Length: 587
Image 1 (cartoon, rainbow, N blue to C red):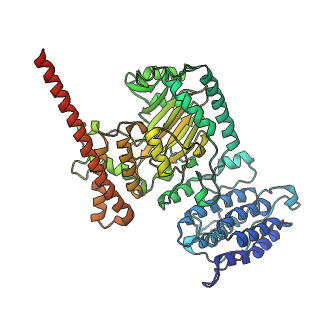
Image 2 (tube, helix red, strand yellow):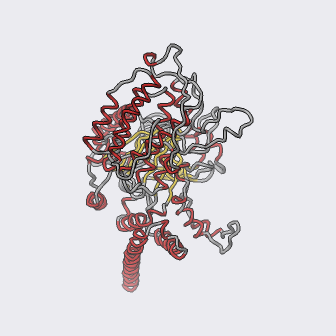
Image 3 (cartoon, rainbow, N blue to C red):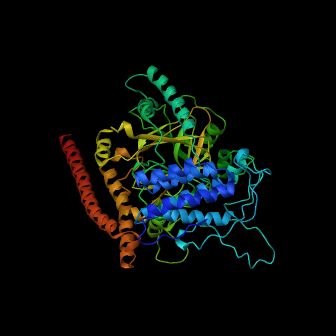
């Protein structure tokens, strides 16, 4: 396809518009009878709105109507999405459209190697129903605009072999479902209509319960039912396409997610991916059963959220033996009081989603290493006392019986979170793009902006990642239990946000799911030392000078707050001691 590089004096938009006829001609010569409407829409949008991002949507539409074949449509859509997010960080946004088209030209070169493909519809096929995709080679594409596919030296092959990229298997003859299942890293398609039915089923059940339960609530389950009814009444699907400022969630293939994370792109909502877990379960039994088989010493105890406990006199949780938990989850049914385990060890290896394996995401691992450091660069030999002080938050398991709900909260200590569904379906909701004023209102009163409640439903193999400070909730259907593996990360490029969230949680401990006051000083000081190390090693650019300066400012605020807390505690202890002595003297 003819994609010459534009001159310096050319407007990127004008160049793109000028390429429409050549693009259409190429499509029509390859496919046969094409449709002009898509190309016209592309031209109109470019000229009327002056938005290069419109190129993406229009090019997608062109491919839906006129492209070479079904498997090529899938592949192209994947690479366009990858290019779109990879290139979004460019200084000049006009160049995104140009480089995206150049990336598409690279894809055209790769898929034009001799092979056959099926048609989208019989009306566009030749008499044989197949088309030879061999064609002339495209001009040299700049290295920074190429799609990330492995190169192969065909001239050096002793035997002519067809070597395709790892995510481009030959899909000839496969059914549609097999095509989707067989493409590694294919762009996920989310079923928002199914999500709405899932939400409505839970909302209706909770509304029925709310009508018959006492007011005020007498159990923790009844208390959560009140709040969840309000959340699900207002929960709507997030915007996943459009302008950057409008997007509320990112439904992406792994490559695009990794590109966004590694580039430090600001996120306006959670990232949702699929099949990013390296570990694979055996197919002969369910994941939950295999999980319990890997646990040892089932006589240990674990904290379990039990909605039947009295509110507010009792705590919301009680201890259970792992043996009891296994029996209840694999054999029992809880009905109106489903158990919810939020903090359980994870014996499963290789569960960190691949898109979170970059250097920016290893701050928490560095904090752990620094904390357990024994002064040696050899394999760690930390004392038992130190190991006992460190809580393993990098990976854990969450098990819940059908119908278990988790109300609005933030995860503690300014840590980002990932969750991967292993079994069942899980509703995940959050408050989208809350303003500082709305966040302050929620911390102080518990009130939240009802027009910003968003949700998705996650199925097996799907991962959700959300940044530190995200206000979120979880909901489930009655019936079968659910099983997720999750963990926390901390990002170097978010050190200031980590400390800002931690500082707020220190002041309002009720907004998070764990105690902050005892752990925060240790974590904050470790991060402070690691940031100083980066500065001394002339690696401040990996974090950003502005973020480091903001981190140092927040660190002063944090230290002042900790002094206030210590002073209050000492004052309370002194008063208690004086009162005790006075009581003894009277006696």
